[in-house]
Image 1 (tube, rainbow, N blue to C red):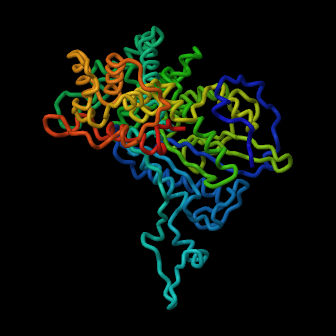
Image 2 (image 1 turned 180 degrees about the horizontal axis):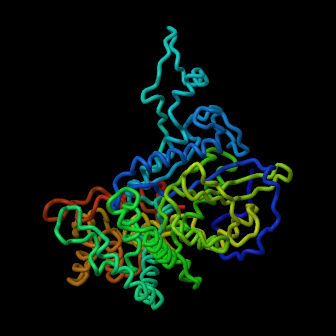
Length: 546
């Protein structure tokens, strides 16, 4: 099914959204084509957290089972009725490779662990299913001699995870503010604004009053508090709220010292802090503060579009509440309920479902929110982007994503963020500088290792230029290429035209001799890999990534 004639890259070029669709189709006449779930971590220990608590793991397992019922028609091993059963799902609710796409960040361990716990609930051990003989033929549980073999761990299902290392390019889709200087600068503008200072001043006495209610450090230090007095202010609203919230759940002694009014006031102030650094009335500042949500929305649109015609029809992403605050501002959810300006509950899920009207064959997107993981917490549909309907035509959804400048490609994110992350090099002027250098005969690998003899073509190299190269090496690949480009252009003038063929093995050759005093490269392995990356972009010349 072709959802739209729009190409997302073109859609982001400045379309203005017309009045949103207000008609509400009959929700009972829909079939589901695909779904994207974006969830928050669950109950954990105090930051920096390394584990989920048993409560958090249990809650996440229950959340996974909730969507097992909705999308597979099973409550554990028991069949249940659902009008949202995903196409192509295994009829027994068993994991088959390719049925689901998952994405999580390994560096944020509680988020990664909640990811695993959720998937355990979505695809629970098959032992109960085995008992009713539903899977014996599919899984070849019986041997030719009549022996029935039970899988280990009660039939634990090994669901494939797409785990993103810290700094991986795909991390931008769920953690788009990380490594983004534009976002950092925008946040600093908020934190140094008069409005922020006024709130800090007006709440100063309250935060200072918390000092005597906080415990000493757990290391046994006498009279050393978890927070010093200078740390107790609105600027640390998040850390204070997190400490009090976690201990109010898990520390009986401390919980008795804090009444409900105090806990609520700390939470409300943190909500205000989070909203201030995620949302702004100024359109330009909002765009910068919400870069994480812009990347997420772009990713959601791509995943939904893919799920319309092929597996995976289900996508499960995990990320931070910070991105959720940004998301609710961009999607104008605060106009639907003031609750969207508050902290999402542990394990909260944001869901986009791609639906087709069985009567008209029109395709819609529905946004749903579930604020927690308890059995009593409903999954509720909400109008998005200021619409008055819970259902938005696909084309209107894409136009709305375009109107908030959704980010759907890595090069777009690199440009929007003015990022110097290594994975942004192929999309930068620096990459073009590398091509110019190679055309002029420079062996970048040798220079990377500190061997400046490969710059013999630069007969007029001055001491100042040589010093600049040395400084570039110590700063990394990006600075190195920029400095080298400056030197080459200054010494030998206009570079060779870029359409002149260049052999890939000459661009990033391994023939250079290491020139550092200890025989080791002066740049990191990660940076070195960026110098090598162009080798994968085609044969016979340099090609930028799509």
